[in-house]
Length: 318
Image (tube, rainbow, N blue to C red):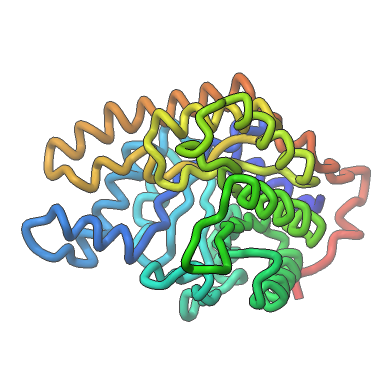
C-alpha cells in the first residue's frame, strides 16, 4: 500500500486499526423522511442543519464520518476533527435496484475530494455478477481505482446485491453467493476497503451460528479490509451483526440509520436529547465491539517502505 493511502486509512480508523464510522451521506431518501415528520417541507439549510446536528453529536465517538459534499460537510469542519469519507454517487431509490444506473454527483470528482482533504472515496454500487450491467459496472470501478491510485486516496466500495428479477428477492443462499463473489471480485481489482452488507437476511434465518458461518465465508473471499454497513436495520439487530462480522474478520463498521434513524421523527430538544444520549451510546457501544472483536485493517495490507530516501520513488501527482 502506498504511503498516502496508508496515512488516509489511519485517519479513518482508531489507533488499533478499527473502522467505527458514522454514515450520514443519505440525501433524497433522508430528506423525504424528514419531510414526513416536519411541519413544512425541509429547506436545504434545514437539511444541512440536521446533518450538522448528527455529526456534532456523534463525531466524538466515531473514528470517521461519511458525509456528502452537497449538504453534509459543515459539521465535518468543526472539532472534534475526524477522518472524512465522501461519496461519488447519486442514487435513484424510486426504481428497482436492477434498473439503478451508476450516476455521479455533478461537478464532483476524486481529485476535488483529495484537494478538499478527504480521507477516502466511497462508491455505492448495485451489483449482481450475472446481470447484463455487470461488465459496465466493473469498468466504472476500474476507472475509479485508477483515479484513486493517481491521487493516492483510499477507495471504499459498497457493492449491494440485488435480484436481477424485479418480481422476486434473493434467497439467503443467493444473497450469500452474490456477496461472496462481489467481495472476491472487487478485492482483486484494487479496491482498498469493502463496505459490505450482512450476508444473511436475518428475518429468514434466526440461527446466529448460520450468521457467523456466512460472515466467515465472506471474510475468506476478501483479500482487503472490510467493514459492515448497517442497511437501516434496527439497532439491536445491527449490534449482533456487527459483533458477528468482527468476530469473522471484519475491520469494523460503517453505520448510519441504525444509529441515528429515530432522530428523523423527532424535533427540537427531543431530537437533540436522543442524539446526545441514545445515539451517542450506540456509537460508543459499537466502538467497543470493534475494539473487542475486529481485526485491524493493518493486518490485511503491507505497510509502506519508509527506508531512507523512500520519497525518491514516490510518484508526483500528474
